[in-house]
Image 1 (cartoon, one colour):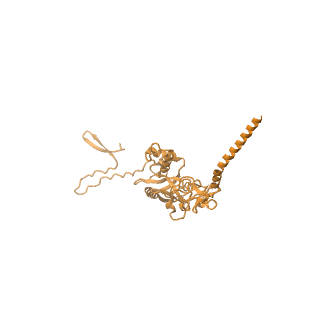
Image 2 (tube, helix red, strand yellow):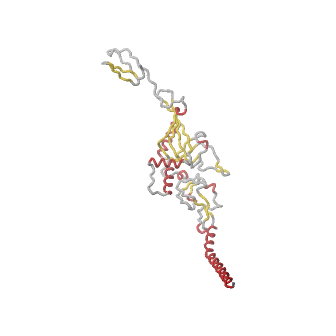
Image 3 (cartoon, rainbow, N blue to C red):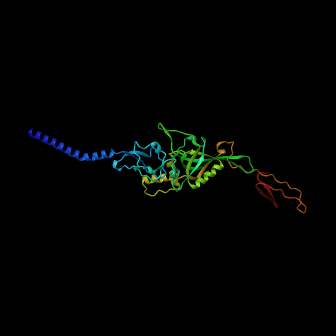
Length: 332
């Protein structure tokens, strides 16, 4: 019994000593982590922000930062006004987890703001819209839209016209509505405002098309769904416009998809005519009314006695024996 009691006493002492040793070794590391987290929180990027990215609430967040590494140009929690930062544009590329500096963002109204919001090689063009053509105001900066052109096509010499609606351009990024480049949020809800103009990001070629389309007919916006990205990317892959290298990683495929979906889509347009909507409307292009045949008049002095009548429209040559005549198509 004495030996058993002594063994239990030695085991308890050994366990207590080992616990104290391990706790003492881990204490400096815990203190270092705690000291690191006690620094001020600075504004960092939640994901990679390329040049021209419009800052939204889900793009940035405040994160603890070591006090000795905090710079004066950082945005610090409690000192930075987030309501003024939302809607600003990234001037320089920012990697995920990197702190944002005051020189890396351009605010609306600053010189060169719109130029900074444009991707390399892109242009900005403004079009007038109304509540009917602008999706009732439910279009915000950063959304992507399609452009539809509605027009009446008249035939030569005909009073009838062909009513058409055609999707001429797709996947255009909205830069601003009126002069606003961000969305107003009140009590966690986005406020919908009516606007009269929309500024779009386009290529130089598309900018020319939009300018001509405004003179041809009426332009309307069609808001695109976010879920269209995957299906559109598969269509682009099938067409061969984007090639994914063999053995590409998931990150590389996502990068290619983002690049492809950032491009405006020009070509392969779809259209609807009045005949597709109503049976009382035309479904084809109106043709010119046939001109009346000119009757043979008296022959001028020295000319032939009878002049052949002028025929309009297509004719068919009919040969009966040795005699050949021309018969207008559609007559008996």
